[in-house]
Length: 303
Ligand code: 0GY
Image 1 (cartoon, rainbow, N blue to C red):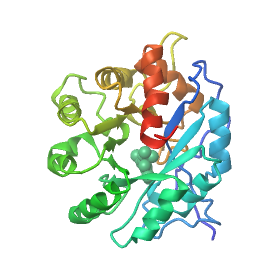
Image 2: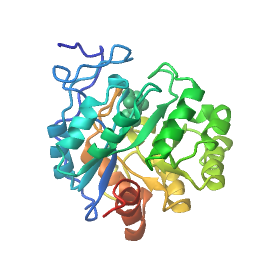
Image 3: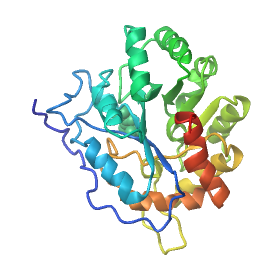
Image 4: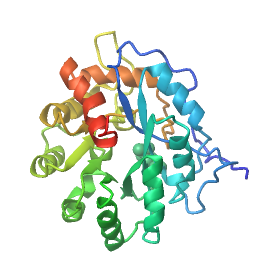
């Protein structure tokens, strides 16, 4: 099937720079996606955007270029609950990728077990209105209970302003809960202001909550340019991510978010994104926990 990408959609950046920061051995890109290709894996009828294709081969060549050892491929909303493209990426990764799926209540236990065999280790619940029509919470809670039996976790994507309303639901989940992109804080507000304090409290009070300290390119107002080699790219995001890494060093993950859905003004250079890491995880020990120990414990506990 031929698909016409959403007007204004930016293609991913085809010539990423080589990062200056050398990733530690065994580093995991713990948040990335594949899109189609649409001709092989059609986009879902209920999708809110149509992306450009971004294949597993392209993802794995980026992995090698940047110096990652492994990937966690997260189901993107443009594929709805049809996990075939993501699962196909896992199956062809030579054991170097694990996945996070989107499922409905109608999913069979046999299907869940089959996904587990391919490397799926979590489900994603999305609460971002521009991306999905919401699934009822009782259905999500039922899914969480079923995947908990497989040892999976739940990834949640929501915006900071919605945390108060979602708090009780999130804290009732029976699994590890991984928050995408620090719940998208408004980095124009103070890092010790009420909004981000609530997120820190959420993590502090609930030891099963983890966070991805990813997506500075989505959150930044100042944008990417490093003024010199010393200064971080996306520097207005640094205090937020650094605070989470320092306070919860054993519950943080990092990912590129390649191929960067829904960016209309600016498409990041993935090499520069990697150069953001030493500014938020400022010692080799913190870097190793963020990039190697934590994702390995969550996705490859057997190694
Ligand atoms: C991200 C962020 C976004 C999109 C999706 O699945 C998706 O469509 O996750 C977004 O638009 O903020 O993590 O990729």
